[in-house]
Image 1 (cartoon, rainbow, N blue to C red):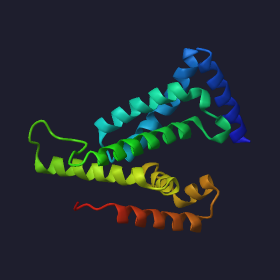
Image 2: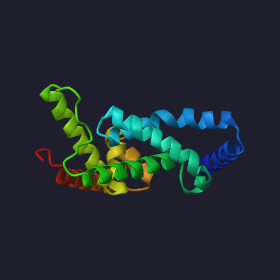
Image 3: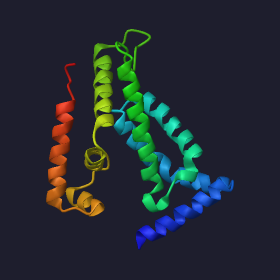
Image 4: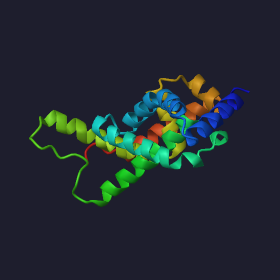
Length: 182
């Protein structure tokens, strides 16, 4: 029943925004901006400047594609996170094609520790961008949202044992894909 209330509310907000109601858009933005940005920062491995750029791209895409949003298929925040995941995947795919280039080249020589931290964050972000959605979702719930296994199980309609297994597989996939000494 709670989901039906969300669907009706989001359909109403969508209709109002599409009709030009700025306060409806502000309501949606205020509710979604902080959790969306936290998600993007997490997916970017903590790289705030990259997260800022991705967040701008996500909101621009959301404005353009708002007529295609279907509240019955999922929440507005979930839809925004999907846009963010695709934006990041495309960004990292593009960056991998540009052989020899990194996401970040310091203008001035930075301390080795900072350069190393940034390179590590870039690798984490790149790995998260390539992970299957269900793996990324349980890792996000566990480590970004700090949800317990029981909470994740309830949210996803799975048993706790199934969530533990999924987390184990997701962690293993992350470890396999993440190569800190590249």
